[in-house]
Figure 1: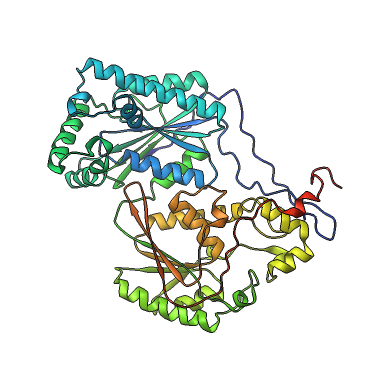
Figure 2: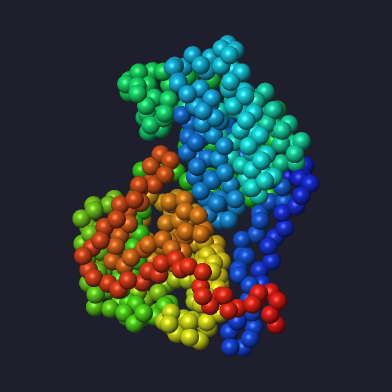
Length: 474
């Protein structure tokens, strides 16, 4: 059941985020042309957006907040979580028991309201001083009064508001949430497990007494998504813009079923042996040996209903063929396109395209090869892969170095500046297992030697010191 009524729109902020211009053309090569860094990720909102979580404790609000923030930052939308519980822990350093959350505890209520106000103030600072685009306001926000305060705060400043309400009455899911999340909470660091469980259930009851869910009639003018029982059903109302559409699509793809994602580069290729980038060569003898070792490793893992994905390139397909299971080919998983530099060594690139070589070292994430791609482009190409990975359970992805870096950056919440330098060695399998608020990583080297294709982050390239400002040169 969905309602997409867009006849009204939230007030606009006084400032407008403009789409960054992407300039094409070759940079400083022998033909004397010049090209700017890519700016393929537009700023998706023309006014800042507050994502306001709603729901009782142990309904997965913080889990959703962290996943959404990780996703939005990965696609290039500056996003930050403001967890009101953290503000409360800073204000009240010692948690005693559930009585702090009783509606009639006036002293505690003053503290809680002050913490919410402090978080809202920091949201305003984030938007005005730090160029943030999305703020995730992570709190229970279970009363109409509290939500009205947030709406008033946002409307006065021209922010858009999108509510995300998590509703769950399944006792097994709630119990699992309490076990996974709350026993790791600072509130219960020194508590017996059974004591913590009893206290937290009583805390939930304190909120339940005054909980007023978003009402489909009374709140029909609000923008929101309701998530029932961790994704068994959704209700969406009044999506205002592109970024809210992407948020809804993302939330409708994630799940909490236990699973693992295995990432592996292809086996060593013939071009790897020659130190050449890109191309579509087959496996070297050592690469074929790794493919056999990978098949043995996967068999020994005893993975239920494993799906295998490869790119369209020979080296990933040849690696997957030894698994003796069906595999799915994704063109989106192809290696980064090095354009005119395909099948060249780094030494040849430095010799023939010295300015390109220097500029890439200056900003590897945004630099785009002439007639090729940047890491920023690659992230956009891989977004459908991430969406499908979130929908799936156990998957083995056989891919390439740049692709694996982008996927790892998503799951490990790495910033753009670190992404191009993540270490993804050949002949090594990474097992990613999503946990409560992050991802557990296990690394398995399969004892087959291979060349090292990693380049460390350089210092400021000396070549740049001899170049004049690219914007002023003809």
